[in-house]
Image 1 (tube, rainbow, N blue to C red):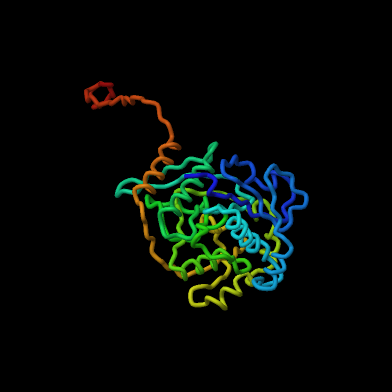
Image 2 (spheres, rainbow, N blue to C red; image 1 turned 45 degrees about the vertical axis):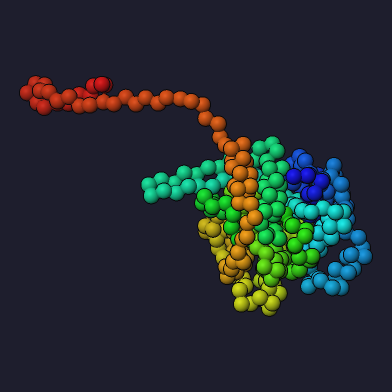
Length: 330
């Protein structure tokens, strides 16, 4: 694969500072990479920055914007598509600016045992994630492919599934929709656009990422303050446009591990009826080999060792007229 065919865009805005505030930039990415921002004032970074041009901002506000808050992220995502296409790229990887970790995880279940495998971010892993995403896009009918969120249930041994992806994903610029609509649910709305094109959105289940926790870190930077303020208004447009499959509400279970929150807070939750488009694969062996190569590369190394167990047995005898037992090693 020619790396010149792939552009990596960090989607960011109003999160001034350096790698501490935007930890995604700690990763050494081999592909062309830059920041797409609506406001990069105060950014300290080695990455190139492309601020969304004012004429595009005005066009987006007039033709796409659906509310007075939280529309910057979908605008940035939309402009990233336009920019990448105009520069001649075939694939666009979009990364949120607050990705803190990468991991590979899966589990294999049998009747008597469940084996779990997990390895957390190592040098160069981000490039293997990008390679795998592009491989899936090249060899399926997907418009969008990406990774899962760490902290949720460890996936079983399947590694491709039609699911929602966000924060770390790739787009096939030849068949993906042009625009991210929506306010707080642009990822959901975008997958529905892909479905109308009869193209699935694919999650590569063993590849996962972690992000800066909003509540645990009291993070109200970027768009997060608007999320908190909006409450149930976050889903108002989706309820109107896609009420047949979409609803939302509050839960006392955390979004990542689906267990009751210890802090007593209520969490906003999207509720979407599941649906499938159908994944068409042109080169199954190529995808499987790419996944196998990644698993092999990051497999945990174990030294050869022999384990001996001392087996003991009881010897019964009579001591002082009473039955006694003693353990003797064989």
